[in-house]
Every structure is written in structure tokens, then in C-alpha cells.
Image (cartoon, rainbow, N blue to C red; front, side, top):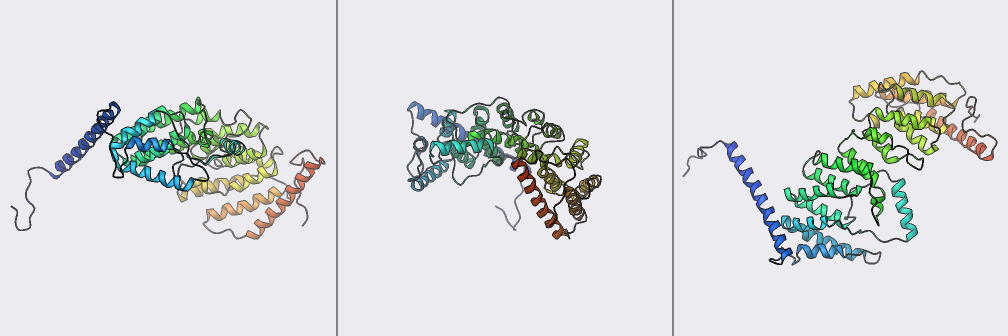
Length: 430
């Protein structure tokens, strides 16, 4: 008995009790997982029944029904409701369902839950995802495939066995999308460094020696983008050197997944590859503009190569007016400084401003005007105030558009062959 409202004395410290409770919970989890595996084996051998949820559905039956699902534009709503119900039933079975989910994932089969398209539309979609899609999605209202849905259920169930089942996907799958999807699920369950070595090892291997997926969908077409997203998840800079050699693809185009990787976590070494590509004279105009945005991120940060490239773009006739404008506009972009505190941002912007002051252009060159305008914008950010000459800013851009339209018309008509005139750029009188 206890009395007087006082807690009874105990012979063990509180810390020991907490530790024993945690150990007990861990042992119960391991026991439950072991029993689940035994049940699964019994089911396969015909010595026992598979666990059944409250709705009367066994885990293998749920998975089989999901695997037989075929979505069309006509049946999408009722079939989607049925799929949601089946996934919910599977999740309710908890750890007992893990062995069956794991067994299906190990079969290396999948069912695409997308609505079928015509061959022409499908080819167009695949090409877009392969070559243009950069910010590939990992969040969906409904699972895009059966394997993705099963990974979601494992993450919802939680526990050691579920995490191990997801981790097996990292070591067995040859699909970039699945590597990214599994890594994201594991990080949400365990923490930001969950299975880091396994995820990065798989991503490095598939980026170096990709595997063609027979009958792949749009997510497989964007496999490289998903693999680079894995590198970005773990802030992995160990692949930068290899990525430098992959920046320009076999078609002579910029690989935008590499470019995105450089934007996110590429260190100073990435600038070398960007500079080489820009100075090659073989890139298309759209690629040049994107490269300029990446290169400018290193300007003002003690990167002599980036600073030199900025000066070269602004003063050389090798680069078009659009590339020049994209470069100068990026100088006051603070998005690439978000990981810095205010003092560090001010230091970089001050270095950029000093570099902009060294640019020598003719008074009648519109880029001289643009340099002056953007110098004012950088200065206003350093001082923490708004830019007070928006009218001059808008007028400058209006004149720039007129000038580029004129240059483009002359180029198309054959009157002039160079995108950039040999002499100073003259702003037409309004």
C-alpha cells in the first residue's frame, strides 16, 4: 500500500525502468516479425491460412486483386475507390502483411496505374519526361504503380521488418524512380541519413551503368532525373566529378538533370564543366541561357573561373544578347544565397557589385545600361531596401526586347549572320 500521496520507493533508478521498457518493446517487435514470417511460410506450404483483415480479405488476395487492376478513362473513379479500399485493408493488417508485400516486391513485377494513351501520345509523353522533365515528382494523390503503393503501405505500417523490406528495393531494383521512392520512404520512417550508403550506391551504379526497363513508363524515362534527386536528398557531392563528364549528352545537348544537380549541391568543381561547355561554341541558345544561370551562382564567392566567365559573357561577341541579359539578371538573384546568413549574403553581393563595376562597355550598348540597372538592384539588396527606379528598369527591358526582336528579324532575313553585332549594341531611339 501507499499513503500520504507519496510515490512508493523503488529499488531501481527510473532510467533502468525506461531502458527495460524500450528493450521489451523491441523484443515484442522482433517476435511479431518472426511470427509473421512463420505465418507467411505456412501459407506458402499450405499449413496455415493467411491473415485476414476485418473486411474479410487476406493479404495475398489483396495484392493479387491490385495486380489484376486495369484502369481506363471509363472506369477510373470506381476502380480508384476500390484500390484505395484495398490498400487501406492491407495497411490495417500491420506487420502480418509485411512478408506478403515483401514477397511481391521480390518478384520484380509491377503494374502501372496510369490511364492508357494512344501510341502517339505515349511516345510524346515519354520523350518529354526523358529530355525535358527536371523537377520530377515523388508526391502523388494516388500511387502511380502497385510497387509504389506497396512501399507506401510498408512506410505506413512501420517497424524494422517494413523498413528492411523497403531497403531491399534499393539493392535489387534497376529503376531510378523506385530507388528515389524507396529512399524517400525510408528517410521519412527513420531519418535523413537512413540507408544512405545503400541509396547512394544504387544511384551511382545506375547513373554510371543504366539498365533499360522493358515496357517502362514515364517514370522510367526520367530515371536519371530521379537518381540525381537521390544524390540531392543526401547532399552527396561525391558524384560531381563523374557528373562533369555527363553534362553534355550523346545528342550534344545539356543534360538538365546534371545541371539541376550542379544547381543544388555541385561545388566549385562543377563550374569547370560549365565553363568548358559554354566556351565550346556548340551549345544551343536555350542551353546557353541555362548554363549561364548556373555559372553565375559561383560569381563573387572567391571562384576566379566563375568571375572570369561573367566578364567574358558580358564583353565578348561570342554570346548572344539573351545570354548576356540572363547573366546580368542572375547577379541580383538571392535564391542561390539562401543557405547563407545575412552577413554572408551581403559579402557575396558586394563582391558581385565590385565585379560589375569593372565591366567596360560603350555608352550606347544596352548591356551597359542593364549593368547599371542591375548594379542598383544589387546595391539595394545589400542595403536592405527596395529598388527605387522601377521605371528605368522596365524601360530598359522594353528597349531590350525591341532590340532583340530587330536582331532576330535581321538574322532570319539573312541581312546579318551574327546574333551579336561586331560593334557596340546601339539602342534604337524610342
